Length: 153
Image 1 (cartoon, rainbow, N blue to C red):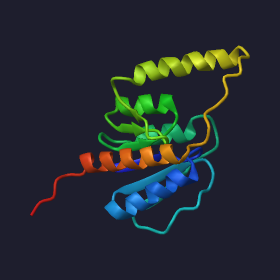
Image 2: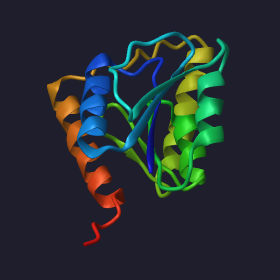
Image 3: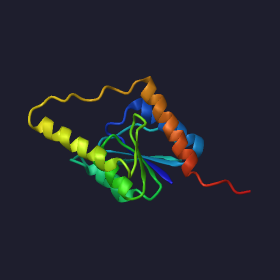
Image 4: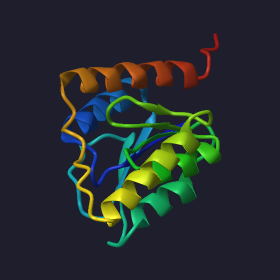
């Protein structure tokens, strides 16, 4: 299992939670972005810088993601692609994207995109507050516990 992060727009507080989780569990964490990002020195934390361009980071994550991996993204089309490959997608607000709801979320996202394209100001989401950060941390812990293979001994 690996954790992949759509890191260009991932909030710093969420990255900090991910860094601590990777160090604690030993699960590989890879941030993918089109600009250089600082990461802590750790054998389990990695960074891939991709070229600038529309969906270049997303495409790299889709190319590399495996079944049962976890992808951190607020990008619903990316979430739909990785869920389709058997991975788990989690938003920085702690919302789990599942095979059962991803098509509905994608439809709403596309509808909102159509509204914005026609000139309607739909606003954007507020920065994650403390409750969203805690929800993310809790959901991540549940996913890591559920995905981790049982200990042998």
